[in-house]
Each structure stands twice: as C-alpha cells, then as structure tokens.
Image 1 (spheres, rainbow, N blue to C red):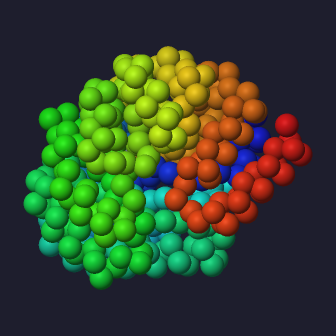
Image 2 (cartoon, rainbow, N blue to C red):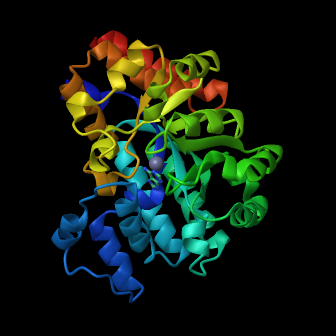
Length: 335
Ligand code: ADE
Ligand code: ZN
C-alpha cells in the first residue's frame, strides 16, 4: 500500500506555505537575516510543536514566519515545498499564503508574491509540478484589513487564483468577511474558506451562503448537520480534509476515530492534504499512509481521493483531464 500511495499521482489542495517551513530551513534563513529565534536546535524546535488547540499552533506558526524577510526567503521556502511535491508524485498544488502575516511586519506585498510565484514558475519548468495560489485573509484581523490586502493584490491578479480565510476560527465567523468576499469575487478570485475545523456547522453554512465558497477547507463539523451535508452534496463542493493536522490540533482525538471514511460513505467529495506539514508530522503522502492504515482504506478509496484532488482543483478542464488520465492509467496498472 505504501508504494501504491507513494507512486499515486495526486494534487494537494490545502497547504499553507508558511506551514511548510521546516526547522532546518528556518534556522538557515534566520541566520542569513541575523534574526534570533527562541530555540537552539532543530530538536528544540520540534519539541515545542505540541499543541492543545488551533491557537497554540498559530502562535508558534506566526513566530516562525517572522524570519522571512526577502524575496529570496519566500522563493526558498516555496521551492523547498515544491521539491517535496515532486518527490511525492504531487503533480499539482494549490498553495495558500497569508500576506497579512508579512505586511503587518513591514514586508511589502510584492516581496511575498514575487518570491512565491517565481518558485512556482521554476518548479513548473524544472520539476513538472503545476501550482495555483490562494491568497488567504487572516480572520482574527478586521474586514477593513482584509480589504487593504485585496487592494494590494490588484497589480498581481494574474498570479492569484483564489481567496481563502484562515487563522483563529472561533469568534471570527465567515459573516465577518461578507463584503470583502463579495468584492474579491467581483475581481475574479474564486472563494474558499476554512470552516468547521473548530467552529461548528453554522460556520460552514455561513461560508456557503454568505461567502459563496467553492471549496471547504476542513469542514469536519459539517457532520453535525444532516441538512448541511445534503446541501454540500447538492452544490458539488469538496472538502479539503487534513488528517494529521486534525490529530495534532486535537480536532480528532485519534486517527482511528477520524470521520474521513464516514464522510466518503455519505457521498461527500473528500481530498487528503497536509495543511502545515512542517508542524503536524507529515507531508501529504504521510497523511495518505497513516489514514489508510488507521481506517483500512482500500486502493479504490485512495484512487477516489486522488481523483477528487484533481477533479476539485481549480485547474482548467484540459489540464485537469491530462492529470485524470494519468491517474486512470496508474490505477488500471496497479489495482
Ligand atoms: N493557518 C495555518 N493553518 C491553519 C489551520 N489549520 N486552520 C486555520 N488557520 C491556519
Ligand atoms: Zn489550513
């Protein structure tokens, strides 16, 4: 099964580039920028990665991101992740980035976007990995602040496909961002949002009805409401599920109790993703491997999950079909 997963062509649809920041690279960039971080070794950093909830993690995640200063830093961070994609048969990825995490510290929007997008261009050419970018608004900040970010993105619109919503969910419902989502959609961005990770099913309803999202990030708590499940199916909206993130942040107590298979059995369109792989103990293939073992998933289940990852990506239909054909051939030869 491990080999089958490793060679399975797949897409990753829920990945925060700041969450892919491995401790070794963090040290290297911190040293290069002469910034001190409160750890003496990679081991010390890894020891600090114990979380009781989303906020515990976010505090450390923002601290880690604060060593990123130059365009080269953002390039290196992104290219390092894309190399891991290539090694895992991740053929396509949709990368979230949090501009406000950086602009709040005085880093220019263009430094962030240029570093990230240049790495994506090089990776397409050299590694054959395609990518799209999702600009995510930080929900603990105001809608006004999100509007500023939207405006900063205008000169770079051709590099950004979608807008997302992340950071502290509880107390920051999707409805807080109604106007900025409306404006983002008018600008041509596809709306997605984190919903139902720690927030309840009402947050998922709001994300659907008020923000008009086309994909749900996490969505675990949608299972609290049968009418909502039917509505998600009716609208043909996929969920980007992140198993190792869910256990690391105590959203799920044990992978064996993870609702992923139940979600699939209910007819929901599920994908497997790593969320913040440097913090949660595994890249996307590790997520597939561990959830397969925990829930006894079959090759057919894994094929379906990988198929959804291409089907529910925001790629144009022609490119999507190329990847789907590649997957189909792989499955025929290896099932
Ligand atoms: N930012 C990075 N990872 C996140 C997650 N899992 N939930 C909310 N915000 C995030
Ligand atoms: Zn996330």
